Amino acid sequence: MNPPVAGDLCPPQRYTHSTVQLFRFSAVSWNSHRIHYDAEFAASEGFPDVVVQSTLHGETLTRYALAWAGPNSLLETVSWRNRTTAVAGEPLTWTGTVRTVEGARVSLEVAVLKADGTPCVTGTVQLALV
Amino acid sequence: MSTLDEVLTRARSLVGRWEDEDCGTVTVKDFCRYAAALNDADYIDRAREREATGAPVEAPALFLAATMSWEDGPPERELRPDGLAARESPCTEGLPVRQVHGGQTVRLLRAPVAGSRVTASRAVTSAERKQGRSGPFVLLGLTTRFTTADGTELTAVDETIVVMEAIDSPGTP
Image 1 (cartoon, rainbow over the protein chains, first blue to last red):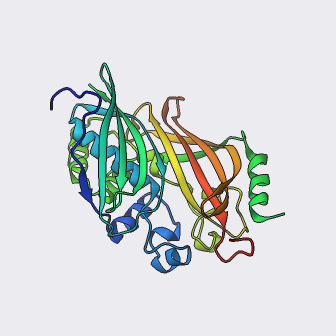
Image 2 (cartoon, rainbow over the protein chains, first blue to last red):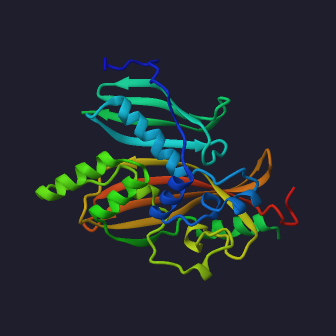
């Protein structure tokens, strides 16, 4: 990878979260909120299916940023805001744009988008290139 | 007093009051199961290889931040109807509310290493009443600091929780 500069676009990454993954992530993170594994309950709260955990979005924002930056990168900070919910099986796209490069520190604007481009989550990831 | 007013009153009485929670001694198995839930087989391979050679094994970066609670329980009968425990749903015990995460900021200061005993110190930092597109809500701010037994800070998390009236609650628009 060439040295990053502000404005660089990271290749978008397309993915979905399965219901099995949402269940396993709830289990391993001791998150028993029923909106994440009980579709009937999720519907009672107005969601079309079981809801992707906020912290799983945080993982996605971070992991694709680290994968883009390569094996010599470390996560320093990740910050995100939930805009709307995503559900199991929904096609999602991770996007990233280099915001700043200061020495070995790279800051990315990142987002998770729905199929129509609506952002589910927006945030920033700050990495150290070591 | 409305449900959201009650949440607000409870939350404001807790602002700045820190509580410690023992996360126990974190293990390679904890880390690998977390990575497995993320379909990260490479992490598992690397962690087990390092463990086999006696090298320190660092947790996945957001392992501490993503774990919602370090309690031993509670049993199911003590959960709220939405499945959350009282610890995970501050200020809402017995109240007809629904809630979602607003967002988080996670700062990684030092990676937790398998074999470390970790403490989570948490406090409500703010509580505000807001008006959104789908009605009023209370925005709770919480901060959690994860440290080792010698006081080394590992991870700092600032998060917000959006608390709304339950859909079938009388005050719900």
